[in-house]
Length: 261
Ligand SMILES: C[S@@+](CC[C@H](N)C(=O)[O-])C[C@H]1O[C@@H](n2cnc3c(N)ncnc32)[C@H](O)[C@@H]1O
Image (cartoon, rainbow, N blue to C red):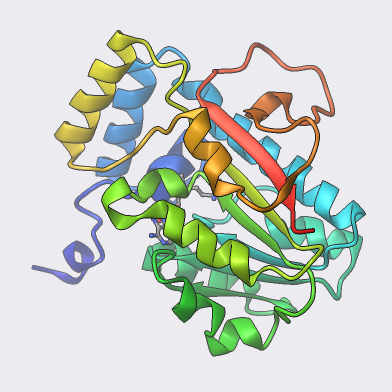
């Protein structure tokens, strides 16, 4: 095995597949072929990355307007346009941002982008181990968990299968929020999938040996237990406080923002 294989460049990685779908350049052949297959096989696939990123930006802007100045972006992926720290520092250069991903390639790209940026860092960690993240010295150096934090899970939970207990993962981060903290989730919704969509999903996940879980709106509600969901509640991502006209939603991404009372 050469060094390149050890980093997993011979199989698709979600951060790089997603980067390719957004027109990025930090991806390799296996990532491009998985993304191309999905784009060819699903009519709505080309809508998803942009729906996702645009929702993330609207949600972060809302949190900034609400006075939140600390952010943890779980499953941050590769840097793109309008990253969390870009938005946060445009509003307040003293705002702090910690990016977290379990893909070392995504983390290294963020670290290199942030090497001269104050108040932001990227750490390699697995969201399935919340305690290790919440006590990580690089996180605690920037984030005061006794004050409001915005915790973002943007197209991240779908990579945590039910056997790894995503409800417990979300609960641990939710419990760590101080009053005024916010939880932001955008993820794959199963409610609108047709039988044909489900068959394609199975074919693609089997072909590329990936685990990508769509969940029902009922499951989404559970992620926000004990928090106050902000208007308009849990909705399709483009319908969450749109700031400009948009085409029809894909129907596949559900989004919500909630505040800890
Ligand atoms: C589709 S990308 C989303 C990137 C970014 N959040 C966005 O919406 O632009 C999913 C990211 O979640 C990361 N991820 C998946 N499972 C994870 C886990 N258990 N812990 C941390 N990151 C994870 C992947 O490596 C990938 O970078």
